[in-house]
Image 1 (cartoon, rainbow, N blue to C red):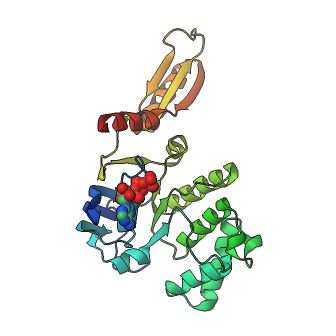
Image 2: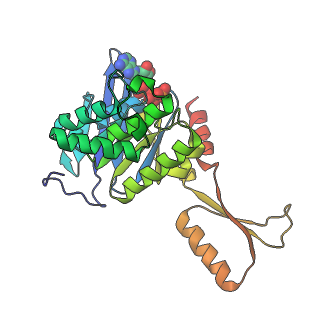
Amino acid sequence: MTAQHGWTSTVPALTGLGLARSFGGHQAVAHADIALYSGRIIGLVGPNGAGKTTLLLMLAGLLAPDRGELLLAGAPADPKSLRAHIGWMPDVFGTWESLTPREILTAFGRLHGADKATADRRAVELLHQVHLVEFTDHPASGLSRGQKQRLGLARALVNRPQIILLDEPASGMDPRSRIELRSQLRALADAGAAVVISSHILSELEEMVDDVVMMTGGATRGTPATAAPRWRIRLVGQPADQASYIDLPDDESAAKHLAGLVAQGTPIADFSRVTSGLEQAYLDLDADRT
Ligand SMILES: Nc1ncnc2c1ncn2[C@@H]1O[C@H](COP(=O)(O)OP(=O)(O)OP(=O)(O)O)[C@@H](O)[C@H]1O
């Protein structure tokens, strides 16, 4: 987009440092640190009321922090530049339901400075991308919850953002839409976007994300080691009741170990991802809190 920001994979695309925000006397976010990198998808997880949405709104430039700093590609960011570079998908599709998907997306394109013809072209392109083209000119009020979520995703992508923030994007989506969402987000990350997804569906999140940031009581708690994807290799010929598994903590060590076994000619019965790591880490964190 604009030339003044140097987007690289080493400097975070967006950094939030010591962010805090209260509503009246209630401290919604007390201290949040987060760094989003191009090409990576972060899962933001935590119990209800932990402050995830409030943090995302601050990162999106839609809510002013009381304290803390926001850096866009390493440079101090003001709300206007944040909004120019960020795509924001709220958990519920808001107002404007009497308008059609085309009108909604075109209006957002115009808000981002596109002329009418360009905004309209982008709207139709996005409606194809999220498989809503048959509803292009029907009022959005007639869309199902999952279809509205897909329209919300299209709306977040109008400005071709380098940073994409999604609050509970998969809620209401059917399995096919969730699978498509996952591959669309991975494709966007592969094309250089930095992505954050807040979600309570931990097993699904684990399939989608590269890193996890936990939040409880208004504070980020970093990435739990146990949240890293874990892999399990089962060797052929070992009875199931004996220690016939080799558990590996991350993708790299799993790939190396597997290659070593294959090179030695060791017969392998199964190589699979252990999906309970994030759920267990979440429960451990929640138990610490109570
Ligand atoms: N506009 C607001 N006015 C007053 N309190 C608010 C406001 N927004 C959020 N809060 C409060 O701040 C806290 C954090 O809310 P937030 O929505 O950020 O949490 P969350 O982690 O996204 O929760 P959930 O998982 O339920 O969506 C909650 O106690 C919430 O009630």
